[in-house]
Image (tube, rainbow, N blue to C red):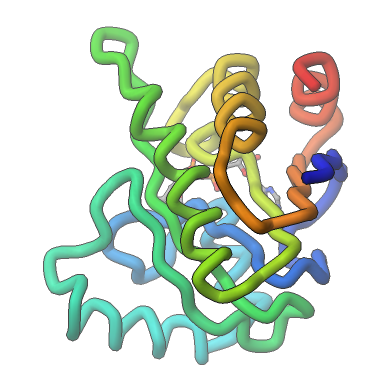
Length: 167
Ligand code: AR6
């Protein structure tokens, strides 16, 4: 597996799948989630609604992942995963690692060979970037997957520098 770092907007990535840092409602939100729904168009929300009406009636649990179309984005699929909200009193690292592992498992089921990840949980959910980068890189490196190209798409120079130092 090749791991690369990109500074920029994940909605512009032409990877087979882009990962969305969603919330369990799957109904959209701010940050990456808002950007993906805006850029991909209403088809994504339509498929999310179907998922909520079917298997995910109670929402997508934290640490799990599910795929929809990528709509009008260059990618083929969006893999929605729900990161944990950062807590100083409870260690939720395993749930954050699970987001990366489960997203790669879903990517394998789609036979996706390239996957672009944002830095899950490091925005609205408040996870410190350095710790999030460590968990993301360790988990992806150790994953048992057929994905050949993992791209971390970092939104700003500070996030890029943190991932670069860890890599
Ligand atoms: N491309 C790449 N990275 C981005 C982009 C983009 N277009 N936009 C933001 N980031 P966040 P979370 C970075 O808040 O912390 C939503 O409302 C951002 O700088 O998107 O997992 C959901 O619906 C940060 O480093 O996700 C949930 O309610 C990283 O992506 C909640 O936010 C993640 O920030 C999830 O919070």
